[in-house]
Length: 155
Ligand SMILES: [Zn+2]
Image (cartoon, rainbow, N blue to C red; front, side, top):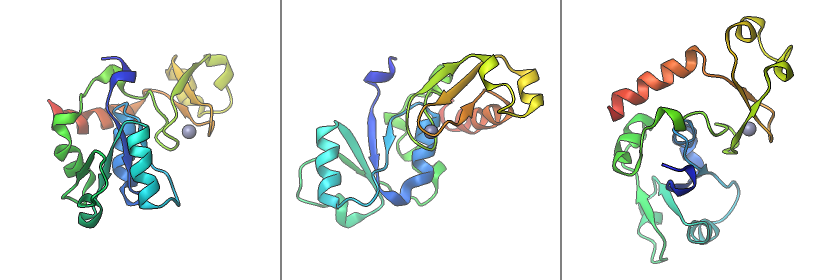
């Protein structure tokens, strides 16, 4: 499935961990800091997102916008709650910066030389970079760990 057609989310600030995991799955999961609930509701509509919240009060608001009230405080449970909406595809993973929610770009191996641990450089050929924060990504052992966690939920 093309990334652009995937569901987009807007999360409350206290759902940082879930946002990170949605990004790992390849989803656009935005957290806008220091804005009002009304602004969040408007952005959800404008950007065609689904608003995710743990707040019953917010989920019952009379404002018209798509939203989901999450029951659990645990991010793995929260992913399970959203399971019907999410597609797990290994090829869609690591397409987004887990910190900034920005899309990652392929970067030539020579350009990461000296900027990542030597053993990583020696082992891997494909690297990605976030153009906002400059973070580098590669499908190393942490990728396998993340994949296993997700496979438990989705497969
Ligand atoms: Zn970033």
